[in-house]
Image (tube, rainbow, N blue to C red; front, side):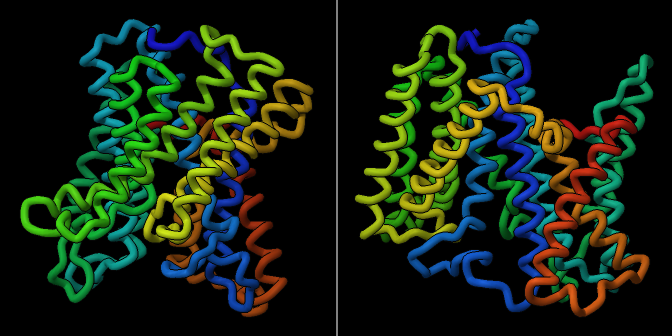
Length: 394
């Protein structure tokens, strides 16, 4: 064991994850609505600002960081050897990268060159995802592997068939997609977590190292010759700083060896938040806030917001025991990957079945209300799919 953590499900983390997913579905849907206010849209790459929409992705990264200590220590408690743990981390990282690349390329399928309708290709991809990453409960293990094997074979065939753009482009990571970016940050954070043996202060130092590495990668010499491949990891380092921030917060709240309670816990968390805030303020003049460029100020401000939001949830749920309302978010919080891909599945099914929304739902307040209702509906559907034992786990 690396850290002695609180056992059992942490409702405040599940609630944070579920709320983030609900907001993610809403903001992804509302992005296609015309005439919405600027505070409901992503800030442009070169604007020195951020909206609540720009905090959704870093909230996912932050939650990944909060979950890593629990996941790693759980596997160690079950008897995993060092190499078994690395295999699990590697498989999970690879899964996120593969999903990210497929989802990005699904937007540019050339039907004629691929020999398949773009919508059908995307839907078959999601069927394969469910086959590969579903948690099966068959007593005969070989049945589970048959389903997983079919899904893997399907992904290989779809990848081989794929042509995008003008028909000459093959399946490639021209960018990794949201899940792929999470995959890189998860991989680096897991390595750092194991290297520094659960010491919170060391992870705080590594947050600074990740930010420093990003800054180094902005220097002109890093984009020349043999250094260019190192510069390409600057954005991943910035994202990793957010994951590490979530990791630090988990240790403050749930590491029993630290034993932080009451005023000590409040002081430690507040001090951490203030340090992040001071760093964000001081870096902003040189590195403007930008989600697209993953600037240090955006990373640190996002981490500050996540620390504050989770702390509020922890106070309400774990301290005041006001937890009944979290039952609505629990299905999504316990099945995040399925909840993440479900809106895309519904979107492609609507295209395949030629179902379109009335124009009134594509603009202004009616469109915003529709997107909010759609997000809520997705959570109810996931709840039903959970009962059908469709639960994805990387």
